[in-house]
Image 1 (cartoon, rainbow over the protein chains, first blue to last red):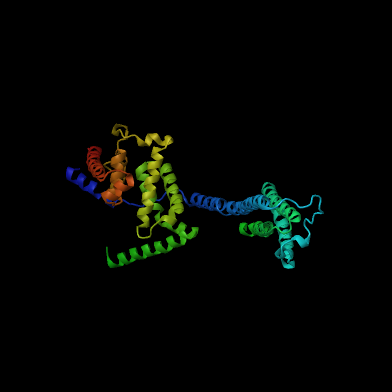
Image 2: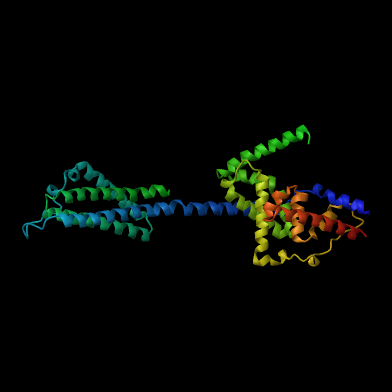
Length: 182
Length: 187
């Protein structure tokens, strides 16, 4: 073969087949990886967000209520008569908005739904959420007790309303976390 | 290219665009069609760069998996085929850098097997392929991308992560070595 013909062959490399199919079908491996990628994306995004959303909301609510109690106590006058029969939790001491029958009914329904939701949660998550809810209830009870000692304290009344609203928001977030995960 | 050929090519491109759009929305069947249409060229590129059928299959498979994950970032104005090839070249380069494939990165030409050329075979392609496989890595990469797959120096250099001048020099070297080996192989 001459030098010229060799050169011609070198110049013909662009005529080589570009497509050289693999000996085995690679798609099953690719499909498996795609499926794993999809599952990982689902685990990474939705559940994690929905799991921590109510907890974060409740943490913020608890912080708000705690700060509120501190402010309320700081500005409220000392009890007038020691040993006065407490009116804690009595309807008369509650702000009008919280005595509303519709609010009470909605709250009872929400509490029942949250109980169902808590029962369906993994134990570790359930404990965290239940603990935050207990703290929230305790804070509201503290405000009610303070109001019992100082029923005319407008700041405590406002604080109680705000805290109850926060409680409703937290309960709603817990209830809705179930529907977001599905 | 005839008008009919051009029409067919345009149809293929349009079909690709439709499949890409569906695949971007998570349709794995559409992506499978893209895989079936492109796997031959992607695997061919990997095989010529790695010279190892098993490694080439692994690289091609990884390239398609990476492509699936990167589809949302694919810009439709560029060629899907070129984009896929870029991913495939990157995958091969990554495998070369991996510790288990350190031997692939050897650049000493003396360590390459001489091409098995035969005067009797009527199949020039086999001789050419064998001669290409015998080339040093850098020269082979440039020759495969520019010579076999028709990429411009700038495109090939960008894929390989080298300067355009280096790519030109490697291609020139590859052609010289190829000519030399084909001549030696037939003497």
